[in-house]
Length: 157
Image (cartoon, rainbow, N blue to C red; front, top):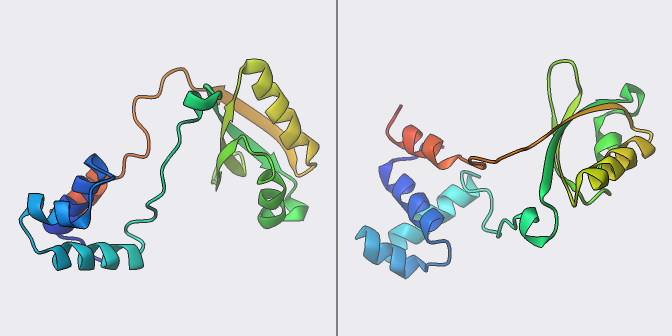
C-alpha cells in the first residue's frame, strides 16, 4: 500500500494524541470525519497500522533492566517449537529470527541483574536454546521509531 501526506498526518496526529477521537482529528486536520475514518480503516486493513493497544513500559512496573540476547538454538527442533517454548517466559518482550552467528535475537526485561540471570537460565532450561549472549541496555534514547519512515514514504522518499 502506498501512503500519502494526509495518511502521515493522520498517523502523526494519533501518535501525538492517542486518545483523541476521529472527530477531533478531522477538526484539527481540517478534513471530513469520514475521510479520517476511511483512511484509518484502509491503513489498518493493509497493516500499515499494526495495533491500537497501549504499550506498557516494563520499567514502570518493576522491570527496569532490559537486555538484548543473541540465542543459538537447537536446530533439530525448528524455530516454531523454540519460539513456542520461549513464549512461556513472560520476561521475553520480543523474539526475532536473525541472520549472522546467532539464530534468534530476544529483548528481555528483568527486575535486576540477578533476575536477568534467572531469565537466561529459564531460556536454557527449555532445552531449545543451546547458548546465549547478552548485552544490557544502559540507556534507551528512542524505540519503536517508525513514524519518520512512514512520513518519508508519504513524501515519496
